[in-house]
Image (cartoon, rainbow, N blue to C red):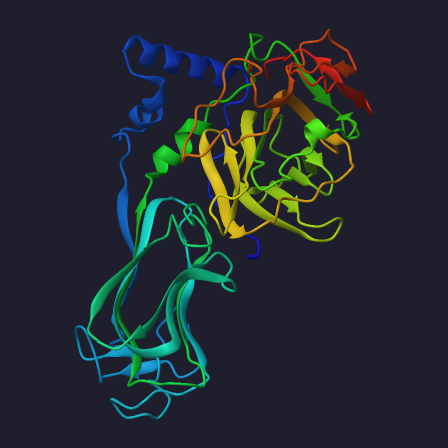
Length: 460
């Protein structure tokens, strides 16, 4: 399991939350709609930039011509600067460069050495990659790897061994699909690294040389990141927000454990849990649970007013203590937000996949763990809310992966029950109700406790 996977953005918080903001929002949308501009690209039109524009940025450009290791780099073992082999310039980085060996010497046995750069920022990246030149002469059982990390400790990537025909070759790794880790796009602290590992058996000459290391990203223009989140007042009563579940600081709604809500247990058992929640102000600093089945899965939000808010999605491998989690950081603005967590059991033959989706975008995913046959089956109730001062709407639990791409359409009308729906709550009961009906075939009726009731959206 990797360490906590960080995801950071520096998103501008909305200041237009009162009547003036709603008037300005309505006027802008009215003008854009009348002009025939699709809602999908209103943010780019407002910002004066083309849709899908990206700004190329070089984050790392290292030829090892200067001081070793350079700024931002760290080295262990025998990595050092060398003139024995080089793709361009006078020098490269050699896995034996500080080991006292002459050029074309056989490399050391039983060693592990690393060359690491970071952290660097991919919080605004819409694409990113690592490129470098490699010269490798290695024997069976000895391995050279190029890798990436979200925490500077746990690295994942690609490995090579048994290279008996050394020559300079160009290598690359897409940082949106790191093997064993997934996407690092959106993460504000990312590392790349090279690892050289040998055993105590056969050796070859030289080992590994690295040259011309580059990390590049295509960055989203700041206006594209900010503007979609400027105007988000609570929508007026309508088909989706005519009523909702109102929660106080002790309010929640629960349904007792039953087989229809035991998700992700078998090798082919996937699930999605999703819903809409309302952020009422920017001063909240509580830890709010959105939904959970304790000792099986949960999603909660830690709100901050001086740093990004944090979603934490947790899955238990074994009861009580053995769990894994991923998290995603963002500045949530006032208004309604859609969030979904998915679990794809046997995403590949070696990995299962966890993912968080927020407001139409894949926020974080990870394929760093394998559950066999599935996640822990607890006998706890399924709970919506909990230490949560806010509103929930249109909550759905499904035994399938409903979101799998980089983007998705945020719901604007109520969900309809289908063959994958295990529970669906519209919260359309009479205002003040504490019993909330399930629109699926399973009859998973929720019961409110601690002051949880249905209420009408006030629009502010």
